Length: 257
Ligand SMILES: C[S@@+](CC[C@H](N)C(=O)[O-])C[C@H]1O[C@@H](n2cnc3c(N)ncnc32)[C@H](O)[C@@H]1O
Ligand SMILES: [Zn+2]
Image 1 (cartoon, rainbow, N blue to C red):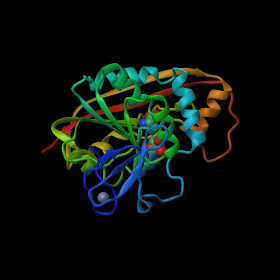
Image 2: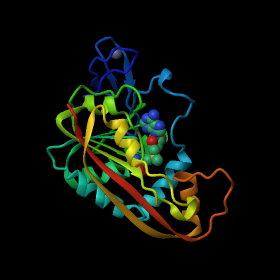
Image 3: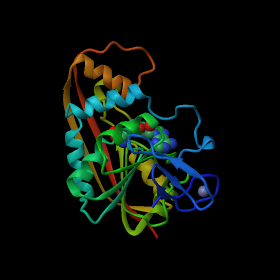
Image 4: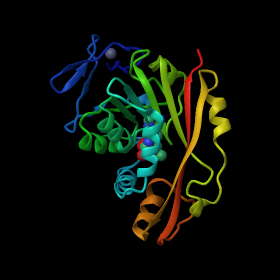
């Protein structure tokens, strides 16, 4: 079930033909591709927030080339989803991870992203997931305890809201770039795990930690896609074929209270 995002309304939204309506009469159109835009003007910082259409298309080409398949496998192993699960992906992008996890497990799923281009791309490809444009750093438009799993893959961190929408027995999976992620492009990065665990500590305790890594031989076009979508260097960089490491630290959390 979705909740109304107009100011503090939070009434349940009921589906009518091509729109969702709350008891106070606030209404949201269902897009042609099937997603719903619940983003309110005060919840966006720019006219087109989040990833651009070009960045979404570039990321999708990399996912489609199989570059991130080993990361998907690791995430599927850690989440162990079944058809009984209800999953939220906060900052789902083009829907690659959630779309595949849903197809494999038969779980019910909601993907939230602030980018209309990302959600439109996700909705066009993965029709069994409910795709929502919303700001995952603010109010998540779901009742308390809706989900058995929340996942966030190099995306949003909203500990209080993740806890609220998770059931007491629910689990949270947070994937952050590991220090060796994109090593060949940016050198060794910082270890984000301690800070992430500290940020989630008021609501969650760490129940497991692992690293998923893969190295891919990318041609120049794929390196260009990488520069467009995942790694945006401050100086212009000419893409050339190279081998690139993709590496995630996977943190599994359980509710602290
Ligand atoms: C690095 S991408 C990761 C996308 C996807 N999880 C993946 O791994 O393919 C981060 C995503 O977060 C989205 N995003 C940025 N700010 C957001 C916000 N406040 N609420 C929801 N999504 C947001 C971007 O549009 C983008 O799709
Ligand atoms: Zn309303």
